[in-house]
Length: 250
Image 1 (cartoon, one colour):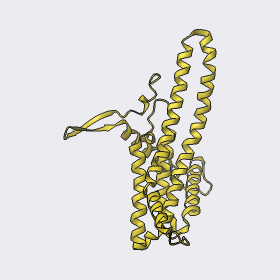
Image 2 (cartoon, helix red, strand yellow):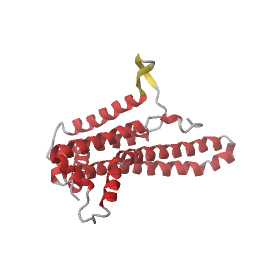
Image 3 (spheres, rainbow, N blue to C red):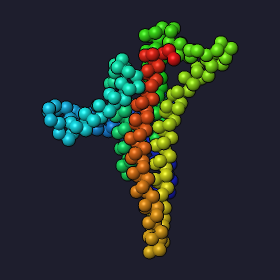
Image 4 (cartoon, rainbow, N blue to C red):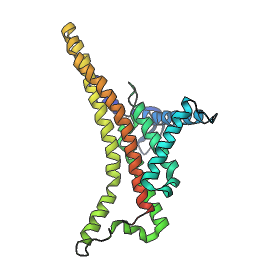
């Protein structure tokens, strides 16, 4: 991995399950880490809610901070009516957050650096918005693509732009998270490789490795910030899209 920074994103088969049409179905490292993420999130909130003390301990305080943070995000972005989607948004936020943070542990696997994972999360949000929008508003949901107050002679062009913008939401929603995780981890791996290469040149090389080491430490702190920020961005965009399903009129 010191030589090839892309190797850390490789999906490997751990346990073969079956072979269908020449394609092998197996339990992979990606599936393993998704199970670890679910187990870690579950352990946090099961442990935090066991006592339910009036004066919360450390673990309960952490859980309450996460809860209130996501609840406020949902209320501010989608209104009080959007709280019906709170469990969904909260689950998405915690999964992405833990996936990003766990991926920063050396020799671990970053689930959100896989485009297929982020695409499926984004498509889940997209189809939920479309399904709920038509279920609640019927064809009036299409008002989302017809802004009010637009002159009639440019309305067709505006509608086309709105439709294209809506259809590309899963692309931007998924690629933003995937690209940030991918780029950040590659950068960390490259600078870590510089440390190993320079250290092999003896005393002078060890002094030269000080700069890449400083960059790795600094970038690690930055990546931790990005990991949290990207989880928040993914959650708030989900809330904004859900608000369109709840209130489709501009």
